[in-house]
Length: 135
Length: 135
DNA sequence: GATTCATCTGAACATATGCTCATCCGTCCG
DNA sequence: CGGACGGATGAGCATATGTTCAGATGAATC
Image (cartoon, rainbow over all chains, first blue to last red; front, side, top):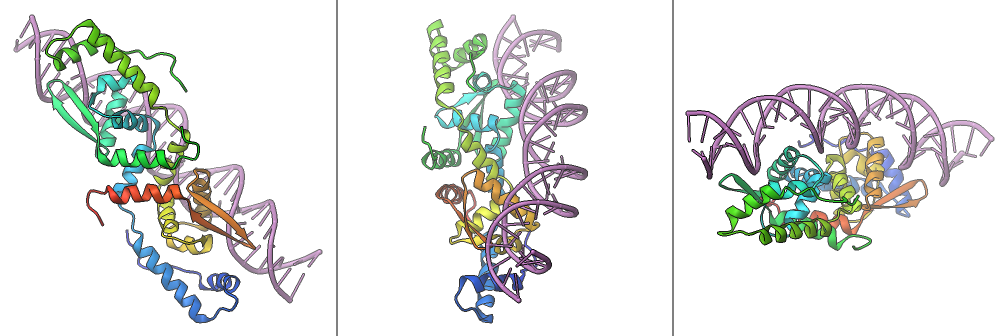
């Protein structure tokens, strides 16, 4: 995962800084290189984040997440008619959401109840509050 | 987009409610059907949300978003060495992020400066605050 | 214990994605 | 104007994704 080294084009960077700063010396370039290296180190990518985003990024799974985030517990047979795919697809989708930590499952007899996790609620809320044209 | 009708399996739903409620009558089934129909109507899927989630769900674009959300403006030549792909791929990725409303662009001479939008910051923050094993 | 029921699982397939390469578009500079 | 430069764009291709179908599982019912 961790890159061993960064192949920064210092010549180009120097031209960039030459335009940005009225007057740019070698030290400015070194400083920017250090800044970029630090930035790269600080912004590691947690696999969980990608998994969650990719899971929510599919229409069926997004809709299921919305339905569950509306509150309460639902079983597959309730959710299946609300999204436009087969029951099998719903099951696949809910598994993906569960693997991503966006949904939790509870068994009761023959039924499996699903509910949204806090993470799902928070993410959907962030989407709601930052939407350009609010619903 | 809007489904004209929902093909709810009322027989199965009746069996479900029979297990949930000690004692279930026709009205309970009708009520649940109405509840589900209302739920389906309330949870429309804004295209913008899917676009944003799918955009952030790719590793390269996620990393770019993180780098930009760390603050300030960056041009392609600064970002390119920090993610492990060609400059062309960075440009493609930033375009996708811009289309999704996650990044904004500013021209200055030959350089194009990119910065994260509020939506990006909020979404990444939601991910940070809900992560199971905090960094 | 055989059957029905709710759900899960894996294979298979069509489609979407993400990259690289080649090329093109503006801008600056001599 | 001609060239170098930063970046954008489109084609092409390997890989990933999402769905359906067929069959498997475990629980309840007869």
